[in-house]
Amino acid sequence: MSNALKEMDKVELVNLERLAHLLKGLSAAEFETLEILLDEDASKTIAQSISELKSEQRIPIDEW
Image 1 (cartoon, rainbow, N blue to C red):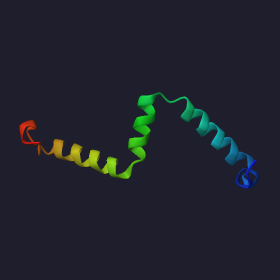
Image 2: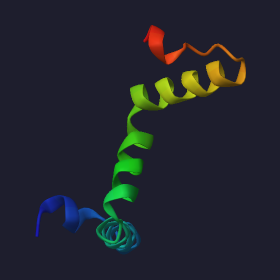
Image 3: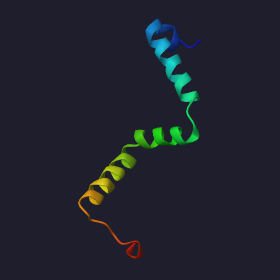
Image 4: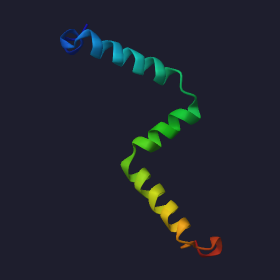
């Protein structure tokens, strides 16, 4: 066992084990969603796109 794991208290270790179990149970789509949510640039782009959509600042597809 690594030194980092030895130094963790039991609560931290249990929380890491729970997190690992949750991550293993994610579907491919859920995992991809998690990756996007954790990607700061992607989150900013999505927020900007939603804002533009709400303010009707849409670009016609033929102008892309």
